[in-house]
Image 1 (cartoon, rainbow, N blue to C red):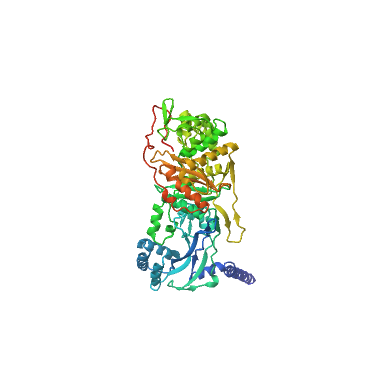
Image 2 (tube, rainbow, N blue to C red):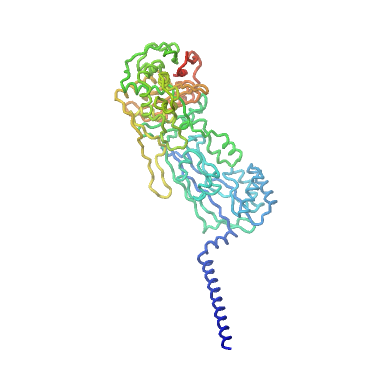
Length: 622
């Protein structure tokens, strides 16, 4: 009996232990649910009656050097869909058809988007930046179809349309690669990001923090109100102040649009610190098109827009503007003097080859000053041979050719430095015929417009190579001290004082009495050089480099203009350079951009070619 009673007591103890353990487990689970995971389960419960709408924050503004807004924001209507449980596909199909008429989208695509929202039970943005008329029509649908609603948020806006478009860039939807990289940084699948230009380069600074609007909805997805106590307001992005001058950029853009081919680039710098006053590439585009509510407009913009930034990525033979480099090398190294003379009969016989001058009648007796003023090819053939290919290549490298300028924009090309050293890397030999071609900026030499603007600025300031910069300062939204961008010196070209003077004097004469008279400006001391560069793929390219100063002052603007297939630099590019320099000094010239016209056909349009073998012959260069 005692033995049986002891067994019973043991079983009871075991039972009580199990009861205690079960109760303890339930207690721990209760603590976990009520305390440790309270917020998570509260959110799950809230989802049965709320939907979160993310309100796009105003993007940071972009200003020119004088405070003119170049990229800003304005209120815009967005169409959202708040899904309800158990939504039938047939109902979604009817809704998709109704919305497609207003949004100009395919009903099938809209229905797929609506079905995705139902599956994920999350609010979805169906359209953005809606016109006022469309908004009023969609507002009527709210009373018919539950879950459809409109919200107001900030939308990017470019007040001057096709203004500095390649520099400013544009906004667009994320591709899958961008989404994978940014989804952990607060971006949503429907977020807009900068695609090119400043919008892309300063995405982190310009992007604000989106707001959160908790929307109370009923079982049918109808909006009952906003839970204001749980609303998180948006925070605007940081503002960027550029070195760009709106007036200078405007005439650069318009000059290219009015040029013979409407293709090319303009870069204007301040030679004193490398600040970019204008950076223009044509054809350009309106970045507002990428934010249109019209699907077809966005599609056309995405497929037809020319995103190629010729100012930093277009590579071209420099033609006769390169003659200033040949002069700098030969005069500084004592290979020739300003008084060394050459007779130009219109061609140069060298071995079995004949190299032509652009003036087939010849320039007769030439020295340094008339040689550059008239851009005599035969004079520079002779001076180039005296200087030698290695020295010309060395000085070209000193002026930054063959290297990126390191401007803070994606896609910059370094061009191609042509010379004996560069040729040796390819395992090929260098010939004197190559030196002759190099002497007038032909052969395999390729440069970008921004490189030639840096070169013009270095000549203007007597040797300093500045890194081109377009940001003056960043004013941070979160209260951080503003970030001022300082000038950065990349190199120095050391020439004798008298050589600098000879270069400046000759380039002034080019403007006052030579091939560059189209860029002459009353009241300014202008120096420059024209160029017409061989283009194997079509008509010649037109070049013009110049810098300007008020009498007795240092130059405050240097410019490089390229008009693709534009013919003569004097007629196609010169008027644009003139307008840019005048705008930099606050001088108005309404006719300047309209003066751009194709180079005339006539006696100068002589056939090109050579007798015999050897190096290829240059085309006409002026």
